Length: 206
Image (tube, rainbow, N blue to C red; front, side):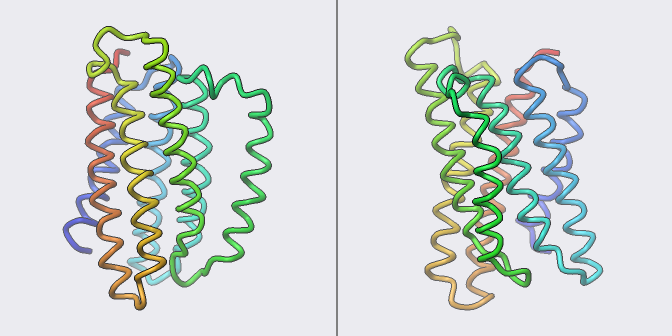
């Protein structure tokens, strides 16, 4: 486990613990807390299976679905545009079907980027819509001191850049060593995302 992977793992688990102590029943912060907990739990199981030589790729696909579902609930709570989409309830079955197709096209022996690319582009767009709503009808006098900004910005940066990384991995990774080199950037983005979410939690109120 190299330094980036270890730092990403430790920061993910630490963020989940910190978020639990900052837990609030008020919408929409609770969805970010649950998101962090889901990330940490799957991260722990993934590493435990890897240490015992057990295939763990299936957990990546589970994580993609869980993350997208929880962040959709978050964006639905903070964005008037997303929350008002009349056919939003159709998203879940459509997404499940599409994800199953992407998983079918994927491999259980190595990470296939299709699901991650789709997830990244979707959440990147939802983040932009949320920021657009805020610019159109500002709710905060100092947005940099609001958890909303850091949570949404973390999604835009992480998932937007992750899509580019995964597309690059798909195009240029001709062997496992090259793929692992490119994948390191995913861990760097994960660390950055965790820092931004931490700032959001620090600014949140119970």
